Image (cartoon, rainbow, N blue to C red):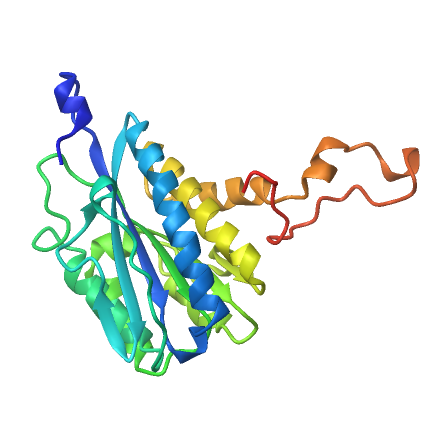
Length: 264
């Protein structure tokens, strides 16, 4: 796909990979995988506009699923958004998260998916899972984190779907570049309407922050801070007077990932 900035004689934009790692195990059957499919169709449409209007980075997408083994849906590599259309996923099987990490280790390389003359920004990797891994994920994570620079510096966010999602495992998957587990980068979600909204807002926010940041170290924190501002209760944002000046109700905005503006 031609780069629009090249046509205008400007400096070509770097490429920003956004990679979705999606649990398609049996526990995702029904409403959960349906919510993911609906959200991804909508999200990719929005990201096309984000990429087209971004002066500093052009987005490319990758989709990796894991159940009993892992599979790249984008088999040929990272794909320009104008060239990719969503085909619905189906759920069934185990939860081989370690197999997904192995695939990330293989493909996050200049010898595989990260081949470009204009260069890449640090990838954004968005994980979605509703359960606990059923394979030897821990050994694979240690290997991947220690040997794969792209995975290490990637901006990693996890959506923990439902009450049985393993928050501790996910906090290690989305660890900071120094290897410290990051539970703040794991966003719990229990209802499917919120899941659909979260997939979209996390994707858009991550693409915007990741495309403009000059360093990888603080991108994750910037994304989380912006997400929290966007997901605070909008009625409390508009009226921040002290509680005793109104009706006695609290004006504390709290930290609830489930409250969304109507626009989302």
